[in-house]
Length: 336
Ligand code: AHG
Ligand code: MN
Ligand code: MN
Image (cartoon, protein in one colour):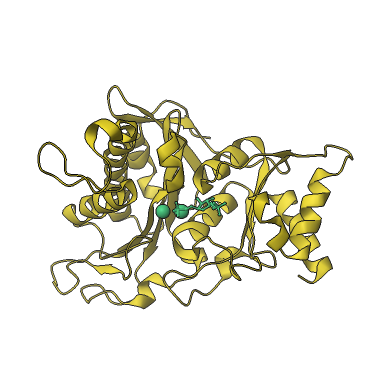
């Protein structure tokens, strides 16, 4: 059990030895992400001042062109990681292709690649509702000192060495795992320091919240329709409460604390749903499993899917173990 109130910096140092390959490189990388979070947090907090500072497409008073926040978050993250020369490759939801970093240079012995969704729930920005950032870290599979290839990024989620998210909510929190449970840190904005506020986070085994965009109901597979009806029936602790923010990070975070299930199923409009396997589903699935929860595509484990494309989408059912199992039962029963 980790004790509350230590800083993220102290926590990283204390836990470094428990990493499988404890060269300190992963710790440095988490430190770089911590810094990138603070930079993006600063930008997100200014979002409401857009009328004053200028909207996307405008030029501000210093002659700098204003960017959409997801583009800006993407640049800040990539720049921070590049500057620290701590990874050999980055893939981002906002980039068509992966980025290779100093991989031709033999001096650079970096072993890790990072995949990011720099701004998740971006449609919430304009209305002052929580957004997030998601990251996922793997060891490269190709030799150190050579350029990274697509194979370094297309690894099944079970190979992740770390994953986490930042939620820019009423407070800013960084929640992450390195495969030894899940810990949450809250930013004290006055001094720019993250403190351990949520040690050893776990999903309750079951819960009473279901999160799904029910406006798409008519397009859902029969199994999902049946499961939604089950959530709404009056029996035992049902009907459940419906909560949907429209930002995966925030919906997941609430469900992990209170107990619940998040669903983004396939539909007759989108055969694989909407969420991205590499930038969204795999990192959240790793965190969910580390927090005693479960993540499925409706039929099986998300972390066992062999990716074939960088921007691949998959249906996503994630949250309290018993609730995800129940949803899978409905999918199986209806053959959907
Ligand atoms: P992003 O902003 O990175 O594109 O992701 C948005 C995702 C996810 O965060 C959210 O849960 C989902 O899209 C909402 O989609 P709908 O508006 O279709 O419900
Ligand atoms: Mn997203
Ligand atoms: Mn995004």
